[in-house]
Every structure is written in structure tokens, then in C-alpha cells.
Image 1 (cartoon, rainbow, N blue to C red):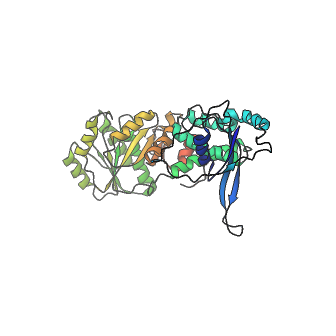
Image 2: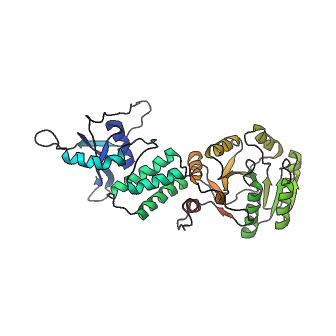
Image 3: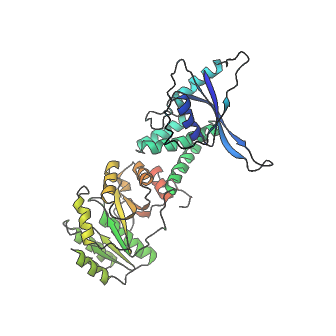
Length: 385
């Protein structure tokens, strides 16, 4: 039985070093928070002390090849080997018993292992994140954070406490994305996206909120001259909201419409919904819409879309400067992992989330708290975003 003690800034870093040195079959025997350094009892540094073990006879060690050219310096220091008994060998009877009880939990320490197992309460969380289609790398990052807390609190936490840990971890992921100032910042608001995601209805919702809640003067321009009834749909919304509308068939039409509405606070631009896989679509946008410094563009994504389709849509529109995304149809799905996957991967924040067809209702600003509420149910979050 090979036993080693590690001192690390976090459980996550300790586990990485354990994987490298002892292999994927190593098990954690104990962990605790320790405080070192400081002056006169103050300013002590908090670390995690972890004791891990591996049986070299029954489980061959699987080490990770170190690449010196790419490996970043580790803050982790190996403090010492575990103490040995007088006869030069550690009595392993108690250790073997504890290893058996922990083996199911820590059998796999690989970050990207889809079959990774966790203690009872954490396993439920992992299964929930899997059902919600949270990307495996993001899921592993979240579970590593939860596992660290699980050991620090000596595996005595309640289901409610573990749930709070999960929400805090996901909240931190969302808050790392720089959203900029909340709300609409520029005069021309361009709404783009593929067919069927609800662009026109979303545009009407945002415009109505801007008028009713912020008392702003708004106007519409539509370039959607491809879809039958598209112009009529926006004209209906314009009539309900009592705002002017112009139809732009080309760039010159667009410039004239923009000039007509120059004295309005906001001008909302509806674009054609077409097959996002057709590169000509984005090219047509550049030929019809005059992109200026006074314009900000929002990409509309439906939560009923597959994750891969969302990624393909974003890549197709990458030539246009996208400020934020708007997630629609939250009421038509029970899977919300793609929200977190997309924001985490592209570091692109969400502006709004919609959950119905009613105008001006069924739309809310996509704060981190609102996105968590959407993912976890009708829970009320008191965090500020």
C-alpha cells in the first residue's frame, strides 16, 4: 500500500496531482483544511491536506505523461509520505477497509470520465446535471468544486446545503462572463437568428418593454421580405404598440428609413429568418443593413434547439459583432444545460429570456439569478446580478 500526503490550495489541485502521481485508481483516505504561515496568528493561508493511497499490487499505477514545455508550474507541494510503523511497513488493515468503502465514490478521478462516481448526495447532483445536458467538461468542473466542499465539511452536509453549493458554483460561472452595462445601450437594435426561433415576436417584446417601462420613443424597420406574412406580422405589432414601421428591400431603403427615424430613441430592426446553414444569409444581411457604431446586434437562440445547432448558428453569425444572445422558448423545454454550456464556452452573456408568446409579457432580463431560477424551477433568488 502506497500512501502519500499532499498539501494544496484546493481539493481540485490536489486531485490533479494525485491523478498524475498515483493514477486513476487512487483513493482519498482523508482530507482537512489546514492553515499555515501568518504573523502573530494573523494572515494565515488556508490549504487542503489530503491523504491518498494506491495498492501497487492489485491496481497498476496509471501515470500521466508530463509535458515540460506545456505544463504550468504547480502550487502544490508534497509535504511528506504517510508515517510508517516501527517495522518499516504501514499496517494496512484499516486502510483497506476504508478504501473499499470509498472505492465506488472515487474509482475514477479522470476529469472527462462520463462514468465518474460521487458520494450519494453529490451523485444525485451529477445525475441532474447530466440529465440537463450540461457539457461534461463543465460538469466535471462543477463537481470538483462540490467534491472539495464535501470533504472539507467532512461529508456531513445536507441535501439543501449541497444544492446551495451547486447554485453557487453555477452562479459563479455566469458571473465570470462580462455582460457590460445592462439594458439597451445604442440607438439601433438589430435582432438576428435562424428561422423559427421567434425573432419578430421577441423584437416586439423588447420594444414594448422599452416603451412601457422606460418611456422611450421607438420605431421598427423590417428587412424580412422573404417570408410570407412576415411584414404583416410586424405591422400588426406596430399597430398595437402605435409605433411607425418601414420596410427595407435594400441598403438604400435601410438608410432612408434610418434617416426618417433619426429623432427616435430606439429603432428596432427585424431581419429575415432563413436557413442558418446558408452562408448567403449572413452576406445578405451585410448588403441590406448598414452596420455602424450606433448599432448593437442580438442573436436569438431557441432553447428547443440542439446544442450543436446553437454552436453552428453562432459560428455562422460570427462575422457580425454579436453583443449578447436572447434565449427563447424556455416554456417549451425542460432541459436548460445548453444555456450554461453556451455562456461558458463563448463567454457571451444573455440579454433576455422568453417563455411564451404574449407581448409585452413573457420576457425577462436574463440576470444570472433569473437563469438559475429557470434551470432550477420556481425558486426565488435573492442574489443580485
